[in-house]
Length: 129
Image 1 (cartoon, rainbow, N blue to C red):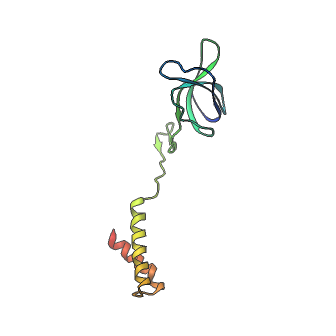
Image 2 (image 1 turned 135 degrees about the vertical axis):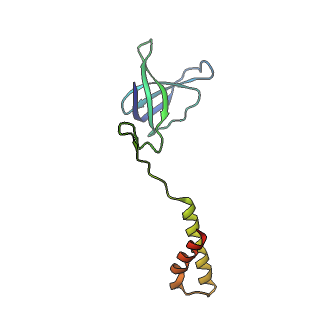
Image 3 (image 1 turned 90 degrees about the vertical axis):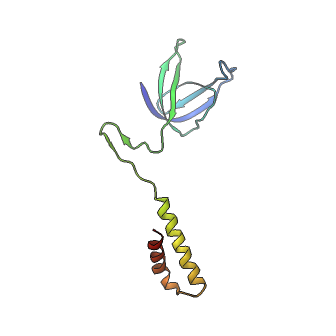
């Protein structure tokens, strides 16, 4: 069964590596506690993860198929609709900055008044688009 929880504590065990350099870690999440076996640890306290929680032959539990939950985890499978929040449009932001810089340069050279900066910024922005 797949779970989602937050990493509360993770520590490396004093066991020699086995297999291809696989290390043993003791991990506590907001829901479970058990062992994590991995050659490279890419988790830290506070990370939101999804994982399977399995019982081993020695009756201890381990975390398997551990993955960090993505930044854009707002996709709802049950509704079949995606509610993706688009980040700021970088291209338009850069155009506005260039237009503003042009208007500031005109004002600093005395070709326009400070009160006209907003008007010229809008005009330059329209030209650049």
